[in-house]
Structure formats: structure tokens, C-alpha cells
Image 1 (cartoon, rainbow, N blue to C red):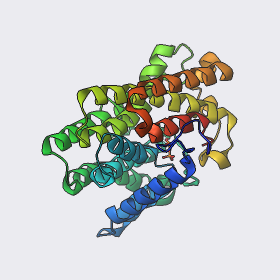
Image 2: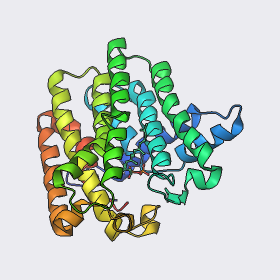
Image 3: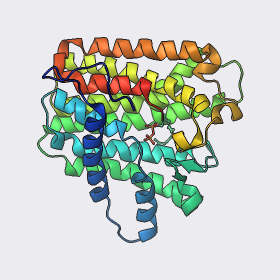
Length: 307
Ligand code: GRG
């Protein structure tokens, strides 16, 4: 992980991203653990907790907390939404790994949900997490103007549906095995399947804090650029990283005959495009000054990450 990123904190001292990520991750892990106690029927709660607490970078909740704090809000205001984002992300991974979708045996270094609990329970664990994400954010958020919370809940709904993750996944499935997928279609797939939830993670944090339209627009641009860069790096890592580094099967895109950015542009050009997007994301943060140090560091982390 990039420790010495090219950013400074508010005292002009080097900002330590490793410490920042560890602290935020600990807050998120504790909140997720508390969010979902085992109840009856135990099996479904165990399946939901198995994937929700399986680790992962927790990038989406951390982006939400950081954006909220940048815009003058508190960590506590954004924590329920941050957990909801991770519940939604986790459910999308459970469903993505199913035999009917990407058919994977490993995720986050562990057997996938359906390998442990069976396909029927894995589908329901995903459904349960999706429903609970909305219940949890709606019921647990405090200190936020009601109209801002409603805006966030509506945005979450749009992000997971046909206008977001579901739509991106459908086009991805339809494109499998095709050799004539254009860069424009690939970008549509990824801005919906991956980018939409990353964008909502950042913008939801800003909305919860009551950020101005101008701040929201700048953060939207930042999030769109890091979202696409994240996916380009994901495609690169699928080729260059090992299963141990990724915690999931490596080299899957080639086996599934998926068009990816490296297959269209080559590895070097893909790296260059990702770097360019990160530079644009950093540009969008300029007017926030040193307060945006964590979001700058997170952008650098996205291109430098190894998993
Ligand atoms: C949302 C209703 C609903 C259904 C799901 C299966 C599906 C529809 C969409 C697929 C979404 C998907 C799995 C996109 C890939 C996103 C991606 C690059 C995931 C990896 O994210 P990381 O690297 O993973 O942040 P960790 O494990 O660190 O959290």
C-alpha cells in the first residue's frame, strides 16, 4: 500500500495514508460488526455476516466518511450510510460470484458465500443485505437534515438498480465472449457496475454534511474520475497480480473472454489512462485546499494499490 503519497496534511507534514486507512477501517469494522446481530433463523444471519465481515478494503465507507468530514460533517453522521454502502457492495459481490454470474470460488481470500452456504442461501443473503442497507441507513442516521437523508436514500436506490449496478452487470453479461465490444460500451459497463457506487459513496458523504451544490459538483467529478481509474486498475491487477494478492481467482477476464481496458489499450496505455484520470480527480479537489488531503491520498492509493 502506498504509504508516502504525494500529499501533505494540514500542518504540512507528510500525511500517513496507512495510519488513516487503518483508523477509518477499524471504525467501519466495529460498526459493521454491531450492525447485524444474529437472530432467528440463524443460518441467514450467519451467511450475511460471513461475507459482510470477511474483510476487504472498505474503500466505499471510507470515501463516504472522508467526504462528509471534508464538507464539515462528522464521522458519526455518515457512519450508518457508510455501513449501508458496504452492505450493498458486499451483496453485489455475493451475487456476482454465483454460478449464474461470474462463478467464482474465492472472494476476499475466503470461499465464496454460495460455496459455504449453498446457492439458495447465498441469493437470500444478498437480498437480505440489500434490504437491510436501506433499513439501517434510514433508521440509524442521526444529526442529519431529513431532506438530506431522503436524498441519500433515493440516490442509493438509483445506484443499485437498472440505472446503476444492475444495468452495468446486464451489459457486462451480454458482452461476454464478444470481440467487438467498443471502449464506449466498456466505459458504460464500468461507470454503472463499479463507478456508480464509488460516486455515490463520495457524494452521499457530502450530501449528509449539507454540502453546497458547488462542492457536490466538484466531488462528483472527483468520484467519477477515481471510479473509472479504479476499474482500469482492477483490470490491470486481474492480469498482473496473483490469487494470493487478490484474494480471488486471478486471470479470470481472459478465461471468460471479457473485453477489458488492457485488452483494448495494452497494459502501459491502461496505466497511463488511470494516472491521467487520477490527475483530473486531484484537479477537481483544488479549491478545497489542505482539507482534502485524505481524499487526495485515497485517489493516489487507487492507482498504486496491489489488490
Ligand atoms: C445490486 C441488486 C444488485 C445486484 C447486483 C452482481 C451485480 C448486480 C453487480 C456486480 C457488481 C460488481 C461485483 C462490480 C465489481 C466491482 C468491483 C471492482 C469490486 C471489487 O471491489 P474492491 O476491490 O473489493 O473494493 P473489496 O473486497 O476490497 O471490498
